[in-house]
Image 1: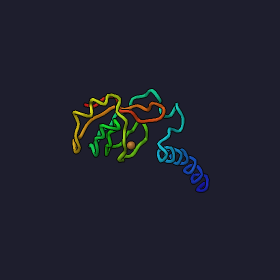
Image 2: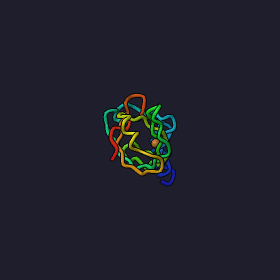
Image 3: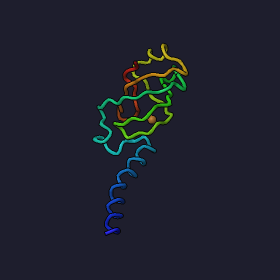
Image 4: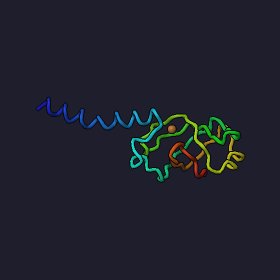
Length: 109
Ligand SMILES: [Cu+2]
C-alpha cells in the first residue's frame, strides 16, 4: 500500500516538473495552456524602463494564471508611450498577454 501511495505522489508531481521546464524556457507548454489570447494580471516593481527597446523590466509577484513564481524579467510594452509615464522603483499593477513570441504588457494601472 505504501508503494502505491508513492506511485500516486510521483504521478501527481510529474506535471509540475513540466510546468517548471516550460517556465525556464519562457515557452508555453502548449497554446492551450498559455492561453495565447488570455490576459494575465500581476503586480511588479519597475527595475528598468527601456524606451528605445520598448521594454519594461519588472520584479513581479506570482502569476497564478501561468503558474509563475515571483521573478524579474523583461516585458514588451504594447503602447510604448506608457513608458514615458513610468520610472524605476515604481510599483505597478499590470495586465499582459502572450503574443506568440513575447509577453506583452497591455495595460498598466
Ligand atoms: Cu516572469
